[in-house]
Length: 289
Image (cartoon, rainbow, N blue to C red; front, side):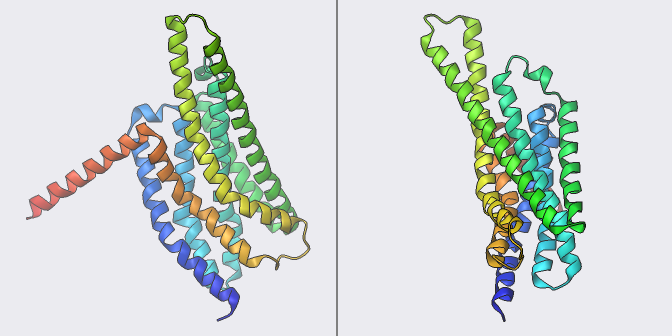
């Protein structure tokens, strides 16, 4: 077995368990949100729902295609992966970026947030992200060089927007804390506003955790995409590229656990859902016995 075949086998083995984790965990998140009307009516949760859906499809479609591609030499699987697989990963990255913008709007325009960020507008933005991501993958069939270059630009823009959003959020929060410290007296309205701001800051910190996870999983591939875009050969850094793809796919399995860890409402909804499920299972087993 050659070195490249060994790397392909290792990649397939590494991705195998994460397929099941991604499918089960993201399906659980989607079901918990869908069965909770209060959560479905929140624009931020709609973005999270879209992210969980894209991550679910990564585990359900993209990772199996990638495993099959690694274990076979069928060129058609490579083309399917370069279009469908990369598109789904691009959707996840775009939605995480949209989430950072949503938190910036919530902190910067917290008094007008409900009128500026509506369910209709969020649905439109989510649809645009899906369309742009899949349209970008179509460039692969036209010119691979331009596909790599556009992928670098798209990834760089998403990372830059997310970073800018969190820097801006930090500046707004710092000004808010400074204003609180300089107040001589606080009235009830200001107290309610401060409580609301604290809730927004907590929500922003939660989203920042998702951003850090995305950076850790996407940045190695971004560096390699940049190197490929300025290189005349696609045979360089093959080993590094394969493992960077695996790291990118693993992000879809990590995200649901971050939701459970950082989002209390979603955590409680998932617990209720699992409790109901096991209660029904116990009831069915009792009836059978």
